[in-house]
Image (cartoon, rainbow, N blue to C red):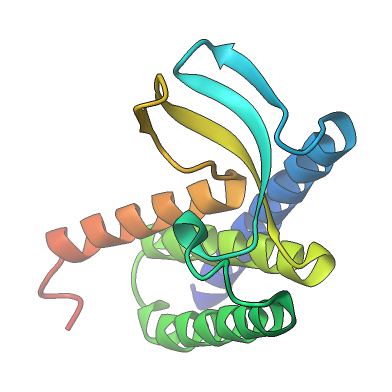
Length: 163
């Protein structure tokens, strides 16, 4: 049973990394930095940016010589904690395994960017006009967010199991 859950996690992690890295390679090969292509005018654009900080470009003002190694080490530490914590949750459902697969795969996809180019490549821009725009993000960010929301739903619905 645990082997099948580990296989599920590994499969999801691999798929997330492949999709994430393929989309980022495609964007960088076919668009100029800050170029924006409207998909649905004023709602959804493909906009090529790079994020040298963390979520919402926080901490991007730290010098790159410090920032990049710090974020790489922090990312590895968070992944380690997630994996360590996950060992206890292996007894949980396949649903929980899928959640962790999405989170780990997304974190790994962004870690690859930090190691490879020192920044995270973002390209998905959603919002309404200029006033209500969400920060530009990528496939890895989406997988992390989906995995976290799914995990929170599981925890809320299964409070007695997660103690």
